[in-house]
Image (cartoon, rainbow, N blue to C red; front, side):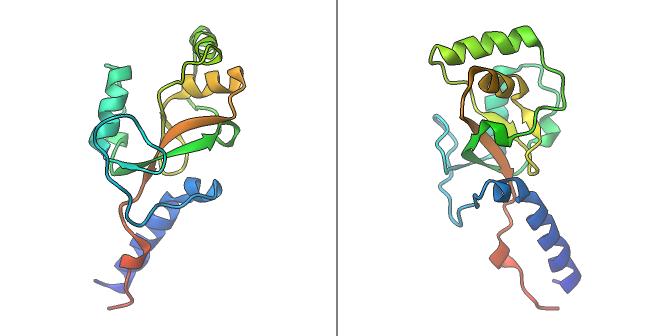
Length: 153
C-alpha cells in the first residue's frame, strides 16, 4: 500500500474515534463480538445488530444508510452529548422522562463517529429532564486498528 493511502486511512481512523476520545474512552483491541441479547458496556456490536435495535423502536427509520461498521456500547455522561439536531416532541420527552423516573431504563441511544445522533434524541432529552447522570449509548467506531498502518511504500 502507498504511504498516501496509509496517511488517508490514518486520518479517517483518528477522526472517527474523536467522540470516544473526548470521553476518555478507547476502542478495545480485541472486543468480544455480540450479536444477540442485551447490550453490555464494553462490547462491540455489528451494524446488523444496531439496525435491528433501531427498527424495533422505529419501523419507519429512514437513516439506515448511516449505520455502518461496528458500534461500541458505552455508558456516557448524559450532559457530555450535545442535543439532537432533529426536533423533539416535548410530550414524548415528558412521557419518557416519567418512565425513567419510575425506574424504566430507556433503550440505548445510537451515535455516529463524531457523537452526533443517529437515533435516540427523545431518549437523551428525557434522560436529561429526569436528572439521569449516565445514558447507555452505542457509538460507531472504525474497524481499522491503529497498529495495522505501516510505513511501507
